[in-house]
Image (cartoon, rainbow, N blue to C red):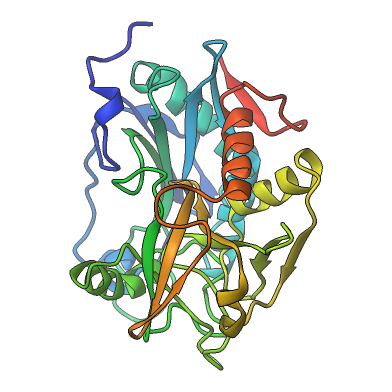
Length: 341
């Protein structure tokens, strides 16, 4: 299949309409068969539950062109599982995990012309999402829901690509203990919008959120998990019930241990110890890993030894190994890569 005439190497992280998207509807207590459609618009009541009470959850994953020219997606079973967990917490019907994976395959296959060529640095981003669609005026869950997946080709999440970024410690809270921070709900991201706009106005790329209970422990950013590297090359990631279980972060911990032979640790990370780490990175589907060069704590700078010019050596190895697995240059663990026919 011929690729679309797109300047792949200069893509930003934005929306480009593609040819097909998948839609399934939940009514009368059951999901319909679902289908690919052309129309990218959604018709709903002004009183739809998603508009009144933000009853919506979503996912994010990518399709890649490998070194061998195959089109693949990375660990879609974990996205299906996480969406199911998010739906349960938001009182939404679970979209069956096998149907989720089938829908992903259908969308990628139907939009193969938009899967960027190997070596361009771009990917096809997939956005599965579900929302309450029937009118609801009293505070209660919807009865009817819609599940959709659209695809869009994207470039790097941060404009500088893999160049180290500068973040700030945020005074606002992203999520509360026993709240919804551990699921991928739209409301969690809405909470971060004011903070990220403020950070950008102040010259920072992202925010570091601390735990809302004590404000002494590192949690995550508005859209990514943290990874830290100690001076003796141990890979440390924060542990909290308010952190979204990033599929990229979980994969990187396996890469660190099984591919690079590094010691890994998931534990509470106190902000006071951040200054003692050798490297810091943000990890997630969109960016894979974005190295952090500096953290601004209310005017006081924490500068990592890895500097502002390039990734630290351990972060670079983690990035190269995981992207090598995704792009087919390195053999993947069993079940990580799904080839799309």
